[in-house]
Length: 141
Image (tube, rainbow, N blue to C red; front, side, top):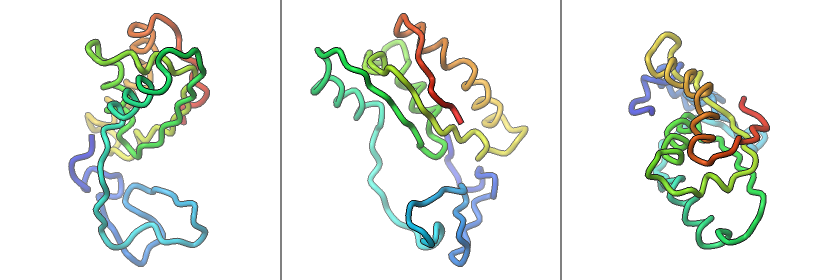
C-alpha cells in the first residue's frame, strides 16, 4: 500500500506542466493534463462496497459477475481483504476477473515490489481456497 508519494517509481514528482502524473495514470479526455492541483476525493472501501452490492442485489441469483479492477496500486490490498478467511463470500460470485495490476509503481528491489509480484502468483490459489473453485482470470496486466 502506498503511504507516501516517494514510493511511486517517479518519486512522487508532480509537475503541473507535465502530461503525466507520478503514478503514470491515464485519462479518457484527449489532451487533458494528468498532473496539477491537488484535489480531495471521497474514499470508498471497495471490498465493503462490493459485498453490499452483491448481498443486497444479487445474492440469491445465479449470475455471472465480471470484475474489472484498475485501482492504481491498491489491487493487492483490495483482493487480500476480499479473500481473507473472515471476509464475506461475495468475491466467490465473481466468474471472471480482469485486472490492471500496478506492481511496477513500486521501486524494483523493494519489499513492496517483491510482495506485489508474489501476490500475482499466489492470488489464484487464495481465491480457490476461499471459494472452492478456480477463478477465470481473463487478464492480469
